[in-house]
Image (cartoon, rainbow, N blue to C red):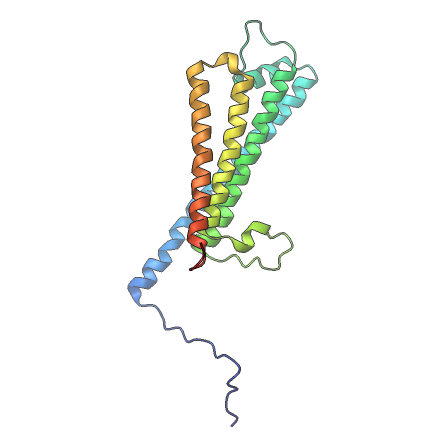
Length: 204
């Protein structure tokens, strides 16, 4: 009987978990309904996106009903009633559609990244559609990416507010600007903290 080759590492033996640690570790699956719920929420966003897109196309062809639905959904108000699809309405609707897309991207990051990080491996290595960011995702990377996505969403909301500024008070404009700056500073603080935590010992 030949002796094992000392150059080939032997796999480490893992002892079975005791009942209590096994139960605690298995509790991570309680998050599964949460991620499934986010998938349902994303489906609702898809339906909302398609409805708004259909209204935009119908309004472009002269439908007053679709135009009023768009004006109502974006909160656009003027002294004279809106009877034609003007540039401001189109811009606000497009920004609203972009907002839906960015929130959907945020949901994907939370669903895929959160499941991969906190629940179970998805074994996407080598898959042609594997997201680039998922190959090195962890809790810190996920926080930075989520903070960046939230800044993008806040930017869209702030731009929509400034375009439709006549319908908002100065207090609301200032408050939204301050909130956006707060998001930006928070993201910078998260990224800097992550950089400090991942710095190798002895680095300055």
